[in-house]
Image 1 (tube, one colour):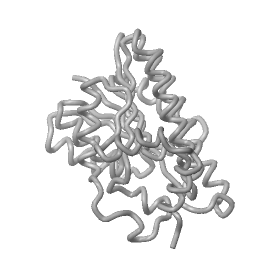
Image 2 (cartoon, one colour):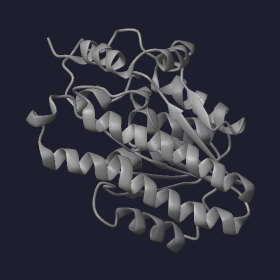
Image 3 (spheres, helix red, strand yellow):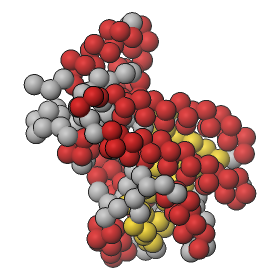
Length: 256
């Protein structure tokens, strides 16, 4: 039975990813900061499905956290067949008004930990002879987004990084998929600092994104955008000056 490691699994997209992979017969290794949430998720899934769930509470924005997580899976003799780098958050505000320590924490989580975990587990997967890494980016990766400046830039890194290592790892039978969701029902808006009502009301659920992610992994897709509308928007930006795209993004994000 294969095992998937999911970061940021305590709520939202990560929690739904755990359910979807368990339903498809995967053992789970789940991690997030909130231990009580992880315990509840473990108990819920193990009651419903014939799979094993291991958990490890950890803040992946902290230095050396990626190495600590990797060492824990080694200690438990867990062979990671799929790594899902889902943990991440955003900050919604003017850049100069943002807390720089929170920006540093965000970049450490969204970029550094994701990169280190990809390196550690890709190395293992090459030795195993196979594996799959899934990185959760964002539609914000495709253009500069004022008021989400550092967040959108971090997701651009995730997008480009994932496509590059996908090319390098494919001959070694290790596949990489980068998922780009638009606005999705999760805790992202609350964490980022959006006011109630600033996200459009009809947005995809975390469950639909989790199901989409599993299907795209099975297809061994490299670049995936969740939703036809998002795919069209990403493609159409190629024909519009970047200054115009930036202004459009700003008008969508600017606080009232």
